[in-house]
Length: 467
Image (cartoon, rainbow, N blue to C red; front, side, top):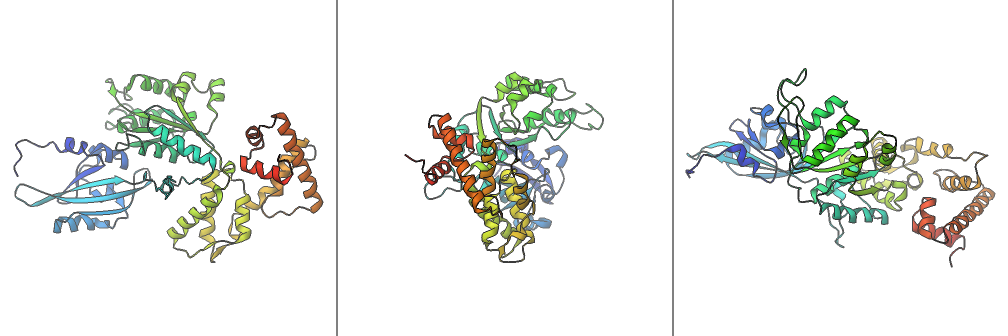
Protein backbone atom coordinates (compact mmCIF):
# COMPACT_ATOMS: atom_id res chain seq x y z
CA UNK A 1 0.00 0.00 0.00
CA UNK A 2 1.33 3.43 -0.93
CA UNK A 3 0.75 6.06 1.73
CA UNK A 4 -0.32 9.54 0.54
CA UNK A 5 2.07 11.08 3.09
CA UNK A 6 5.57 10.62 4.45
CA UNK A 7 5.75 8.82 7.79
CA UNK A 8 7.80 10.43 10.55
CA UNK A 9 9.07 7.24 12.22
CA UNK A 10 10.23 8.75 15.56
CA UNK A 11 6.97 10.68 15.91
CA UNK A 12 4.98 7.55 15.06
CA UNK A 13 6.78 5.58 17.79
CA UNK A 14 5.90 8.26 20.35
CA UNK A 15 2.25 7.40 19.80
CA UNK A 16 2.79 3.83 21.01
CA UNK A 17 1.53 3.21 24.58
CA UNK A 18 4.52 0.93 25.30
CA UNK A 19 8.30 1.14 24.89
CA UNK A 20 9.13 0.43 21.24
CA UNK A 21 11.94 0.54 18.69
CA UNK A 22 12.51 -0.10 15.01
CA UNK A 23 15.47 -2.15 13.74
CA UNK A 24 16.87 -2.36 10.22
CA UNK A 25 17.46 -5.63 8.37
CA UNK A 26 20.76 -6.08 10.24
CA UNK A 27 18.92 -5.58 13.56
CA UNK A 28 20.54 -2.22 14.20
CA UNK A 29 18.51 0.46 15.94
CA UNK A 30 16.87 2.97 13.62
CA UNK A 31 14.65 4.68 16.19
CA UNK A 32 13.20 4.18 19.65
CA UNK A 33 10.59 6.08 21.58
CA UNK A 34 10.90 7.98 24.82
CA UNK A 35 9.28 5.18 26.82
CA UNK A 36 12.04 2.78 25.76
CA UNK A 37 14.65 5.44 26.55
CA UNK A 38 13.25 5.62 30.06
CA UNK A 39 13.07 1.83 30.49
CA UNK A 40 16.58 1.09 29.23
CA UNK A 41 18.35 4.24 30.36
CA UNK A 42 19.74 4.93 26.87
CA UNK A 43 18.81 7.91 24.71
CA UNK A 44 17.96 7.39 21.03
CA UNK A 45 20.79 9.53 19.69
CA UNK A 46 23.54 7.60 21.45
CA UNK A 47 22.32 4.10 20.49
CA UNK A 48 21.37 4.68 16.85
CA UNK A 49 23.08 2.03 14.70
CA UNK A 50 23.77 -0.33 17.62
CA UNK A 51 22.51 -3.93 17.53
CA UNK A 52 19.14 -4.09 19.33
CA UNK A 53 20.13 -7.01 21.56
CA UNK A 54 22.92 -4.91 23.09
CA UNK A 55 20.32 -2.44 24.34
CA UNK A 56 17.51 -4.87 25.23
CA UNK A 57 19.57 -7.40 27.15
CA UNK A 58 17.12 -10.16 28.01
CA UNK A 59 16.69 -13.82 28.89
CA UNK A 60 13.95 -14.28 26.27
CA UNK A 61 15.99 -16.58 24.04
CA UNK A 62 17.23 -13.76 21.83
CA UNK A 63 20.94 -14.18 22.43
CA UNK A 64 22.86 -13.43 19.22
CA UNK A 65 19.57 -12.13 17.76
CA UNK A 66 17.97 -15.57 17.33
CA UNK A 67 14.40 -14.26 17.72
CA UNK A 68 15.16 -11.38 15.35
CA UNK A 69 16.47 -13.81 12.71
CA UNK A 70 13.49 -16.16 12.99
CA UNK A 71 10.97 -13.33 12.60
CA UNK A 72 12.91 -11.80 9.69
CA UNK A 73 13.12 -15.14 7.86
CA UNK A 74 9.58 -16.39 8.46
CA UNK A 75 7.67 -13.12 8.73
CA UNK A 76 5.76 -14.60 11.71
CA UNK A 77 5.48 -12.34 14.75
CA UNK A 78 6.53 -13.68 18.15
CA UNK A 79 5.68 -12.66 21.70
CA UNK A 80 7.58 -14.02 24.70
CA UNK A 81 7.86 -13.13 28.38
CA UNK A 82 11.05 -12.73 30.37
CA UNK A 83 13.29 -10.19 32.05
CA UNK A 84 15.49 -7.43 30.69
CA UNK A 85 18.41 -5.70 32.42
CA UNK A 86 18.61 -1.95 31.85
CA UNK A 87 21.62 0.37 32.08
CA UNK A 88 20.96 0.84 35.82
CA UNK A 89 21.28 -2.95 36.26
CA UNK A 90 17.64 -3.17 37.25
CA UNK A 91 15.77 -6.32 36.21
CA UNK A 92 12.32 -5.69 34.68
CA UNK A 93 9.71 -8.32 33.82
CA UNK A 94 8.49 -7.76 30.26
CA UNK A 95 6.35 -9.07 27.42
CA UNK A 96 8.67 -8.94 24.39
CA UNK A 97 6.92 -8.71 20.99
CA UNK A 98 8.66 -8.68 17.60
CA UNK A 99 7.01 -8.12 14.20
CA UNK A 100 8.48 -7.84 10.70
CA UNK A 101 8.32 -4.64 8.62
CA UNK A 102 7.97 -4.76 4.84
CA UNK A 103 8.80 -2.12 2.25
CA UNK A 104 6.49 -1.18 -0.65
CA UNK A 105 7.82 -4.11 -2.67
CA UNK A 106 6.88 -6.57 0.08
CA UNK A 107 10.48 -7.23 1.06
CA UNK A 108 11.30 -7.73 4.74
CA UNK A 109 13.31 -4.64 5.59
CA UNK A 110 13.28 -4.40 9.37
CA UNK A 111 11.60 -5.21 12.68
CA UNK A 112 9.23 -3.51 15.08
CA UNK A 113 9.99 -4.41 18.70
CA UNK A 114 7.52 -3.61 21.50
CA UNK A 115 8.45 -4.14 25.15
CA UNK A 116 5.55 -4.17 27.64
CA UNK A 117 6.51 -3.66 31.30
CA UNK A 118 4.87 -6.39 33.41
CA UNK A 119 6.49 -5.53 36.74
CA UNK A 120 3.50 -3.54 37.99
CA UNK A 121 0.89 -6.21 37.45
CA UNK A 122 -0.56 -7.64 40.63
CA UNK A 123 -2.13 -10.98 41.32
CA UNK A 124 -5.71 -10.87 42.59
CA UNK A 125 -6.82 -13.70 44.85
CA UNK A 126 -10.25 -15.32 44.94
CA UNK A 127 -11.58 -12.73 47.37
CA UNK A 128 -10.73 -9.94 44.96
CA UNK A 129 -7.95 -8.52 47.13
CA UNK A 130 -4.70 -7.63 45.39
CA UNK A 131 -1.69 -8.98 47.25
CA UNK A 132 0.88 -7.46 44.89
CA UNK A 133 2.99 -10.60 45.13
CA UNK A 134 4.65 -9.97 41.77
CA UNK A 135 5.97 -6.74 43.26
CA UNK A 136 7.13 -8.49 46.44
CA UNK A 137 4.57 -6.48 48.40
CA UNK A 138 3.05 -9.23 50.51
CA UNK A 139 1.03 -8.39 53.57
CA UNK A 140 -1.96 -9.79 55.39
CA UNK A 141 -1.65 -7.81 58.62
CA UNK A 142 -4.13 -5.06 59.40
CA UNK A 143 -1.48 -2.38 58.99
CA UNK A 144 -0.51 -3.59 55.52
CA UNK A 145 -4.13 -3.83 54.44
CA UNK A 146 -4.46 -0.15 55.33
CA UNK A 147 -1.36 0.53 53.21
CA UNK A 148 -2.89 -1.32 50.23
CA UNK A 149 -6.14 0.61 50.63
CA UNK A 150 -4.17 3.86 50.72
CA UNK A 151 -2.23 2.89 47.60
CA UNK A 152 -5.45 2.52 45.63
CA UNK A 153 -6.61 5.97 46.77
CA UNK A 154 -3.28 7.64 45.96
CA UNK A 155 -3.23 6.08 42.50
CA UNK A 156 -6.47 7.87 41.63
CA UNK A 157 -5.00 11.33 42.19
CA UNK A 158 -2.22 13.26 40.50
CA UNK A 159 -0.94 15.00 43.64
CA UNK A 160 2.58 14.73 45.07
CA UNK A 161 3.03 11.84 47.50
CA UNK A 162 5.47 11.38 50.38
CA UNK A 163 6.30 7.80 51.37
CA UNK A 164 7.91 7.37 54.79
CA UNK A 165 9.23 4.33 56.58
CA UNK A 166 12.37 2.67 57.82
CA UNK A 167 15.02 1.35 55.46
CA UNK A 168 13.95 -1.87 53.79
CA UNK A 169 10.19 -1.50 54.26
CA UNK A 170 9.43 -1.37 50.52
CA UNK A 171 9.06 2.31 49.71
CA UNK A 172 10.33 1.76 46.15
CA UNK A 173 7.77 -0.99 45.54
CA UNK A 174 4.90 1.17 46.81
CA UNK A 175 5.93 4.01 44.51
CA UNK A 176 5.96 1.65 41.52
CA UNK A 177 2.53 0.26 42.36
CA UNK A 178 1.06 3.76 42.73
CA UNK A 179 2.45 4.63 39.30
CA UNK A 180 1.30 1.41 37.63
CA UNK A 181 -2.26 1.81 38.92
CA UNK A 182 -2.45 5.50 38.00
CA UNK A 183 -3.49 7.15 34.74
CA UNK A 184 0.22 7.72 34.02
CA UNK A 185 0.99 3.99 33.94
CA UNK A 186 1.73 3.87 30.19
CA UNK A 187 4.34 6.59 30.59
CA UNK A 188 7.77 6.31 32.26
CA UNK A 189 8.46 5.62 35.91
CA UNK A 190 11.89 7.10 36.66
CA UNK A 191 13.74 6.62 39.95
CA UNK A 192 16.49 8.93 41.22
CA UNK A 193 18.38 8.36 44.47
CA UNK A 194 19.03 11.83 45.85
CA UNK A 195 21.72 10.60 48.23
CA UNK A 196 23.75 8.57 45.75
CA UNK A 197 25.37 11.39 43.75
CA UNK A 198 27.30 14.57 44.62
CA UNK A 199 25.34 17.84 44.14
CA UNK A 200 26.80 18.71 40.73
CA UNK A 201 26.10 15.32 39.21
CA UNK A 202 22.68 15.11 40.84
CA UNK A 203 21.64 18.40 39.24
CA UNK A 204 22.74 17.13 35.83
CA UNK A 205 20.99 13.82 36.45
CA UNK A 206 17.70 15.54 37.30
CA UNK A 207 17.65 18.42 34.83
CA UNK A 208 20.08 17.32 32.12
CA UNK A 209 22.85 19.43 30.58
CA UNK A 210 23.84 20.95 27.27
CA UNK A 211 26.99 20.25 25.34
CA UNK A 212 29.98 22.06 26.86
CA UNK A 213 28.23 22.81 30.18
CA UNK A 214 31.19 21.31 32.05
CA UNK A 215 34.29 19.22 31.38
CA UNK A 216 33.24 15.94 29.80
CA UNK A 217 29.85 17.21 28.60
CA UNK A 218 30.44 16.21 24.96
CA UNK A 219 26.78 16.16 23.99
CA UNK A 220 23.35 17.28 25.12
CA UNK A 221 21.94 14.93 27.75
CA UNK A 222 18.27 14.87 28.77
CA UNK A 223 17.64 14.80 32.50
CA UNK A 224 15.30 12.54 34.43
CA UNK A 225 12.61 15.21 34.49
CA UNK A 226 12.57 15.19 30.69
CA UNK A 227 12.56 11.39 30.47
CA UNK A 228 9.71 11.20 32.98
CA UNK A 229 7.50 13.66 31.07
CA UNK A 230 3.82 12.66 31.44
CA UNK A 231 4.94 9.92 33.83
CA UNK A 232 6.19 9.70 37.41
CA UNK A 233 9.51 10.79 38.90
CA UNK A 234 10.35 8.93 42.10
CA UNK A 235 12.83 10.81 44.31
CA UNK A 236 14.06 8.37 46.90
CA UNK A 237 16.02 9.57 49.96
CA UNK A 238 14.73 13.08 49.36
CA UNK A 239 16.03 14.07 52.80
CA UNK A 240 19.60 13.81 51.45
CA UNK A 241 19.04 16.34 48.67
CA UNK A 242 21.38 19.38 49.03
CA UNK A 243 19.67 22.67 49.93
CA UNK A 244 20.61 24.49 46.67
CA UNK A 245 18.94 21.74 44.63
CA UNK A 246 15.89 21.87 46.88
CA UNK A 247 15.35 25.45 45.72
CA UNK A 248 15.47 24.41 42.05
CA UNK A 249 13.18 21.43 42.68
CA UNK A 250 10.63 23.69 44.36
CA UNK A 251 10.71 25.98 41.34
CA UNK A 252 10.06 23.05 38.98
CA UNK A 253 7.15 21.85 41.11
CA UNK A 254 5.58 25.32 41.02
CA UNK A 255 6.27 26.31 37.41
CA UNK A 256 6.52 22.87 35.72
CA UNK A 257 9.55 24.05 33.77
CA UNK A 258 13.31 24.20 34.23
CA UNK A 259 16.57 25.12 32.51
CA UNK A 260 19.17 22.34 31.91
CA UNK A 261 22.65 22.80 33.37
CA UNK A 262 24.52 25.23 31.13
CA UNK A 263 21.44 25.93 29.05
CA UNK A 264 19.39 29.04 28.34
CA UNK A 265 16.01 27.80 27.15
CA UNK A 266 13.34 26.54 29.52
CA UNK A 267 11.87 23.06 29.12
CA UNK A 268 8.26 22.41 30.13
CA UNK A 269 7.33 19.07 31.71
CA UNK A 270 4.29 17.32 33.11
CA UNK A 271 5.59 15.06 35.87
CA UNK A 272 4.07 13.62 39.02
CA UNK A 273 6.46 13.55 41.96
CA UNK A 274 6.59 10.73 44.48
CA UNK A 275 9.22 11.24 47.19
CA UNK A 276 10.44 8.84 49.85
CA UNK A 277 12.61 9.11 52.94
CA UNK A 278 13.61 7.15 56.01
CA UNK A 279 14.53 10.38 57.79
CA UNK A 280 12.08 12.36 59.96
CA UNK A 281 11.74 15.36 57.63
CA UNK A 282 10.01 17.53 60.22
CA UNK A 283 13.16 17.26 62.36
CA UNK A 284 15.24 18.08 59.28
CA UNK A 285 13.11 21.20 58.75
CA UNK A 286 13.60 22.29 62.38
CA UNK A 287 17.36 21.82 61.97
CA UNK A 288 17.28 23.89 58.74
CA UNK A 289 18.56 20.93 56.73
CA UNK A 290 15.39 20.72 54.62
CA UNK A 291 13.32 23.58 53.26
CA UNK A 292 9.97 23.97 54.97
CA UNK A 293 8.21 25.16 51.81
CA UNK A 294 9.46 22.15 49.84
CA UNK A 295 8.38 19.82 52.65
CA UNK A 296 4.80 21.07 52.51
CA UNK A 297 4.88 21.01 48.69
CA UNK A 298 5.87 17.34 48.65
CA UNK A 299 3.94 16.19 51.71
CA UNK A 300 0.48 16.81 50.24
CA UNK A 301 -0.43 13.12 50.56
CA UNK A 302 1.49 10.77 52.83
CA UNK A 303 1.70 7.03 53.27
CA UNK A 304 3.73 5.41 56.06
CA UNK A 305 5.07 1.87 55.77
CA UNK A 306 5.20 0.03 59.09
CA UNK A 307 8.38 -1.80 60.06
CA UNK A 308 8.25 -5.57 59.80
CA UNK A 309 8.23 -5.99 63.59
CA UNK A 310 4.81 -4.28 63.67
CA UNK A 311 3.30 -6.40 60.88
CA UNK A 312 1.95 -9.23 62.96
CA UNK A 313 1.82 -12.50 61.05
CA UNK A 314 3.46 -11.22 57.87
CA UNK A 315 6.91 -12.66 58.62
CA UNK A 316 5.75 -16.22 57.99
CA UNK A 317 4.20 -15.34 54.63
CA UNK A 318 7.34 -13.50 53.58
CA UNK A 319 9.61 -16.36 54.65
CA UNK A 320 7.62 -18.79 52.50
CA UNK A 321 7.56 -16.40 49.56
CA UNK A 322 11.31 -15.72 49.52
CA UNK A 323 12.12 -19.39 50.15
CA UNK A 324 10.13 -20.33 47.05
CA UNK A 325 11.69 -17.50 45.06
CA UNK A 326 15.33 -18.35 45.86
CA UNK A 327 14.98 -22.14 45.69
CA UNK A 328 13.51 -21.74 42.21
CA UNK A 329 16.22 -19.29 41.13
CA UNK A 330 19.03 -21.52 42.45
CA UNK A 331 17.30 -24.78 41.45
CA UNK A 332 17.67 -26.26 44.93
CA UNK A 333 15.27 -28.90 46.33
CA UNK A 334 14.75 -27.23 49.72
CA UNK A 335 11.31 -28.00 51.15
CA UNK A 336 11.15 -25.61 54.10
CA UNK A 337 12.54 -24.62 57.49
CA UNK A 338 13.30 -26.93 60.39
CA UNK A 339 11.19 -26.05 63.48
CA UNK A 340 14.06 -24.46 65.44
CA UNK A 341 15.21 -22.40 62.45
CA UNK A 342 11.65 -21.25 61.78
CA UNK A 343 11.17 -20.25 65.42
CA UNK A 344 14.40 -18.24 65.36
CA UNK A 345 13.31 -16.44 62.19
CA UNK A 346 9.85 -15.70 63.58
CA UNK A 347 11.32 -14.25 66.77
CA UNK A 348 13.98 -12.13 65.08
CA UNK A 349 13.29 -8.38 65.06
CA UNK A 350 14.55 -7.59 61.49
CA UNK A 351 15.97 -4.08 61.94
CA UNK A 352 16.53 -4.07 58.16
CA UNK A 353 12.89 -5.05 57.59
CA UNK A 354 11.80 -6.93 54.45
CA UNK A 355 15.10 -6.36 52.67
CA UNK A 356 16.97 -7.99 55.56
CA UNK A 357 14.54 -10.90 55.70
CA UNK A 358 15.06 -11.47 51.98
CA UNK A 359 18.84 -11.42 52.40
CA UNK A 360 18.68 -13.90 55.31
CA UNK A 361 16.59 -16.37 53.31
CA UNK A 362 18.85 -16.00 50.27
CA UNK A 363 21.90 -16.66 52.47
CA UNK A 364 20.27 -19.76 53.95
CA UNK A 365 19.20 -21.18 50.59
CA UNK A 366 22.70 -20.70 49.18
CA UNK A 367 24.50 -22.61 51.92
CA UNK A 368 21.89 -25.23 52.83
CA UNK A 369 22.81 -28.67 51.40
CA UNK A 370 19.73 -30.43 52.83
CA UNK A 371 15.98 -30.58 52.31
CA UNK A 372 15.33 -28.38 55.35
CA UNK A 373 17.01 -25.16 56.49
CA UNK A 374 18.44 -25.69 59.98
CA UNK A 375 19.66 -23.10 62.52
CA UNK A 376 23.27 -23.60 61.43
CA UNK A 377 22.30 -22.46 57.92
CA UNK A 378 21.18 -19.06 59.23
CA UNK A 379 23.45 -16.04 59.74
CA UNK A 380 25.00 -16.31 63.24
CA UNK A 381 24.07 -12.74 64.20
CA UNK A 382 20.43 -13.80 64.43
CA UNK A 383 21.25 -15.74 67.58
CA UNK A 384 23.64 -13.08 68.91
CA UNK A 385 20.93 -10.40 68.92
CA UNK A 386 19.38 -11.52 72.20
CA UNK A 387 22.68 -10.93 74.03
CA UNK A 388 22.63 -7.28 72.97
CA UNK A 389 19.10 -6.85 74.30
CA UNK A 390 19.59 -8.02 77.91
CA UNK A 391 18.48 -5.07 80.09
CA UNK A 392 20.94 -3.26 82.30
CA UNK A 393 20.62 -3.71 86.06
CA UNK A 394 19.86 -0.03 86.59
CA UNK A 395 17.02 0.07 84.04
CA UNK A 396 13.72 1.48 85.19
CA UNK A 397 10.93 -1.06 85.87
CA UNK A 398 9.07 -0.09 82.68
CA UNK A 399 12.21 -0.22 80.52
CA UNK A 400 13.23 -3.50 82.14
CA UNK A 401 9.85 -5.09 81.56
CA UNK A 402 9.82 -4.07 77.91
CA UNK A 403 13.24 -5.58 77.34
CA UNK A 404 12.29 -8.64 79.36
CA UNK A 405 9.25 -9.12 77.18
CA UNK A 406 11.47 -9.23 74.09
CA UNK A 407 14.15 -11.46 75.61
CA UNK A 408 11.56 -13.96 76.76
CA UNK A 409 10.76 -14.73 73.12
CA UNK A 410 14.28 -14.38 71.69
CA UNK A 411 15.44 -17.17 69.42
CA UNK A 412 17.30 -19.99 71.10
CA UNK A 413 17.04 -18.63 74.65
CA UNK A 414 15.42 -20.51 77.54
CA UNK A 415 14.90 -18.61 80.75
CA UNK A 416 14.67 -20.23 84.18
CA UNK A 417 11.14 -20.84 85.40
CA UNK A 418 11.40 -18.38 88.29
CA UNK A 419 12.69 -15.69 85.91
CA UNK A 420 9.79 -16.35 83.56
CA UNK A 421 7.32 -15.90 86.42
CA UNK A 422 8.91 -12.64 87.53
CA UNK A 423 9.01 -11.30 83.99
CA UNK A 424 5.36 -12.23 83.48
CA UNK A 425 4.44 -10.38 86.65
CA UNK A 426 6.34 -7.32 85.47
CA UNK A 427 4.75 -7.48 82.03
CA UNK A 428 1.26 -7.82 83.52
CA UNK A 429 1.86 -4.83 85.77
CA UNK A 430 3.21 -2.85 82.81
CA UNK A 431 0.01 -3.47 80.85
CA UNK A 432 -2.09 -2.45 83.85
CA UNK A 433 -0.09 0.76 84.31
CA UNK A 434 -0.37 1.79 80.66
CA UNK A 435 -4.08 0.93 80.59
CA UNK A 436 -4.51 3.33 83.50
CA UNK A 437 -2.40 5.99 81.74
CA UNK A 438 -4.63 5.83 78.65
CA UNK A 439 -7.90 5.23 80.52
CA UNK A 440 -8.42 1.83 78.95
CA UNK A 441 -7.85 2.95 75.34
CA UNK A 442 -6.40 -0.25 73.91
CA UNK A 443 -5.31 1.31 70.64
CA UNK A 444 -3.02 3.74 72.45
CA UNK A 445 -1.82 1.02 74.83
CA UNK A 446 -0.84 -1.20 71.89
CA UNK A 447 0.96 1.69 70.18
CA UNK A 448 3.00 2.52 73.30
CA UNK A 449 3.97 -1.11 73.77
CA UNK A 450 4.81 -1.51 70.08
CA UNK A 451 2.27 -4.33 69.71
CA UNK A 452 -0.67 -4.95 67.42
CA UNK A 453 -4.18 -4.94 68.90
CA UNK A 454 -4.44 -8.73 68.60
CA UNK A 455 -1.23 -9.24 70.53
CA UNK A 456 -2.44 -6.92 73.28
CA UNK A 457 -5.73 -8.83 73.40
CA UNK A 458 -3.89 -12.16 73.79
CA UNK A 459 -1.67 -10.76 76.53
CA UNK A 460 -4.64 -9.34 78.42
CA UNK A 461 -6.45 -12.68 78.11
CA UNK A 462 -3.33 -14.48 79.35
CA UNK A 463 -3.07 -12.28 82.43
CA UNK A 464 -6.80 -12.24 83.16
CA UNK A 465 -7.24 -8.58 82.30
CA UNK A 466 -10.17 -9.04 79.92
CA UNK A 467 -13.50 -7.75 81.17
